[in-house]
Length: 64
Figure 1 (cartoon, rainbow, N blue to C red):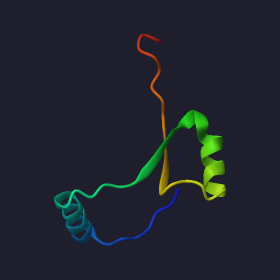
Figure 2 (spheres, rainbow, N blue to C red; figure 1 turned 180 degrees about the horizontal axis):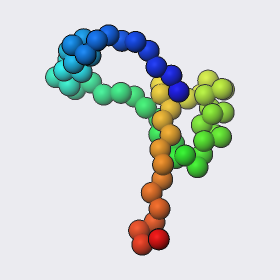
Figure 3 (cartoon, rainbow, N blue to C red; figure 1 turned 90 degrees about the vertical axis):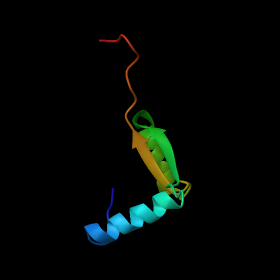
C-alpha cells in the first residue's frame, strides 16, 4: 500500500471534477484476495498492469 500528497481538498475536488467531466477513469487490474500471493508476485515481477487492486470475495448466497 502506498500514498502520496496530491494537494488540498480544493485541488483534489478540481482534479476529480475535471476527470468526471472528461470521462476519465482509473486503469486497474482486479484480483480476489484469495490470490494475494499471485498478486504480490505479479508486482515483484513487474507484470501488474497499472494498479493491482485486491478485493474480498463475497460468500455464496445462503451460506451462513
